[in-house]
Image 1 (tube, rainbow, N blue to C red):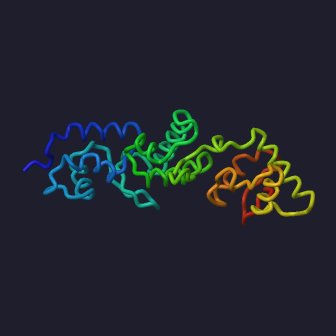
Image 2 (cartoon, helix red, strand yellow; image 1 turned 120 degrees about the vertical axis):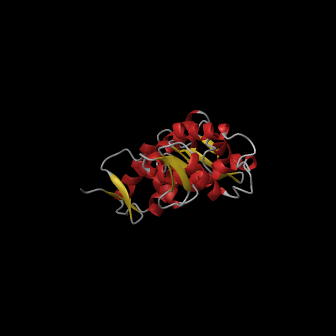
Length: 229
């Protein structure tokens, strides 16, 4: 009995293409592409598919669990998972910036990066591109946007520096709330609501990305304080 209803040539070529382009691919997502082409009596699920791939797949490729997040992937044996994911993240940022003008919904992103599930794409973005992309909901659809696509004022870095200076002048710590209030008053809008920032973590990342003045600052205990050493 044949494991495949159709010859596996297309499947093997697709796997090779994914490995060459990304250095890895997500096994359950890859299985979905060929689920209707395998014999369900021999390969009943993604685990069976992974076992089969390990036996006849491209040499020098390992099937592993991505550390800390659990997704099963196939990758080159000489590549570290998170180093590979960083390279994938750079491609994602480039595609969203250049092809989608800074804003892409997760379904379109998945179509472009079909070697990975929307779940894994979200994890890669959160862990490897958090300083460049944010996750927002627009019309009940999950989207990933570059900071530049949020529509912030062109002089926002200067506005931010002035807000921090104002807080210092009146003797207030630049907590996330105090800074948010100051920015909102300077811009005449509720800052988080106006720019569709979904949570405080996203807000803090945006502030850190746009702060260009001196002295150097970083977030610690929800205070955007000066770095003393």
